[in-house]
Length: 135
Image (cartoon, rainbow, N blue to C red):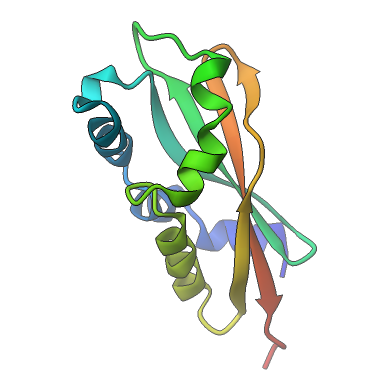
């Protein structure tokens, strides 16, 4: 399979179903007791497929009037990996369902936070695959 094949599966609509727009508000409500306290919105993006790995990214986009600073985001991979509202295990299970008979997810890992700009930070999500032989 190629990145293009996977782009056909992981469209914007599918990614929004995997990680709904309101999940950031629910995350901040759980952390701070008020969703308005959150400094960024979170979305899931598909980046590429390479060597039996699907590369996704959590995009942390600064909210209007808020400050997106490194001290807010660099510890997030550890938090995201176990937070029940982010629920990466469920996201990977749903990715596995979308792949049907083409591949199976065998695991996942989060990379370190990368500062793309002052208004955008990215956390890589790598999903490990076992590709099925084509019938």
